[in-house]
Length: 189
Image 1: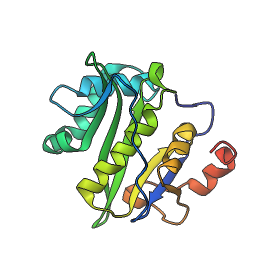
Image 2: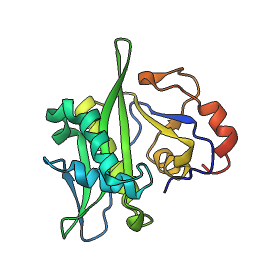
Image 3: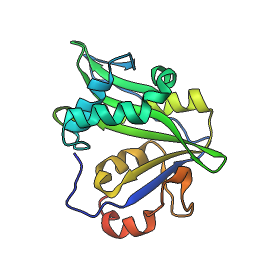
């Protein structure tokens, strides 16, 4: 769950090529699946449960506006964890951003439904997501733009081989406030 009691500052994490891929372990009754048409509803439910949006409708609208133009990319870049009964409970996006002509591979929209947090699903979706990123983009530098509100997730990203980046000014167009953010959350990550 996001901790919106602290100031929202942008934190940039970076994974260098050659960083070992973390192990993947899903509990029994769960599997990885990729995006299918209509899954924006499940994505919005997950993100709303995690505190990203105020309601599911807001999340669906955002998804369609932000990612609708890239419909052909969604099937290969959006990953879910699904329960055996078909409920999707976690999501991951292997996306990108640009600064000028330079393309930055980004992990974005990594969330687990609140009721399913603490079961190891966060580590599993991140580990499988990193594998997906390497498969799509190659073993290159990858980034995660996140916020101080997500300090619990930052621990998981670091477990997966990502390091805090304070040097790049605005990778992929995201203002890097990591140095300032560390003053707020350094003892929590």
